[in-house]
Image (cartoon, rainbow, N blue to C red):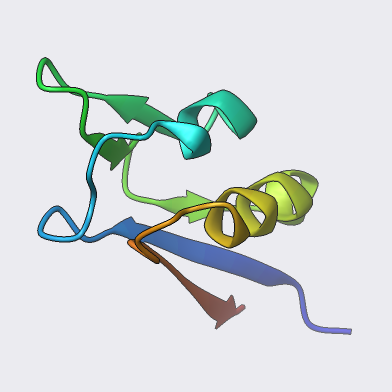
Length: 72
């Protein structure tokens, strides 16, 4: 079975600073001084945080979060 990792990005042009992603998955997202979200590190997330990341993306009002599956 192939392990699946996720690559998460936040579109800075879409993010309006609601910070729902940060509230749901602070291990993955942080906010800058203006309140806009960004991904911590390179955006690679393993399956342990998959549910949180998908929940964060589903709760983003601007659909600013993109999740891409990476197969190892």
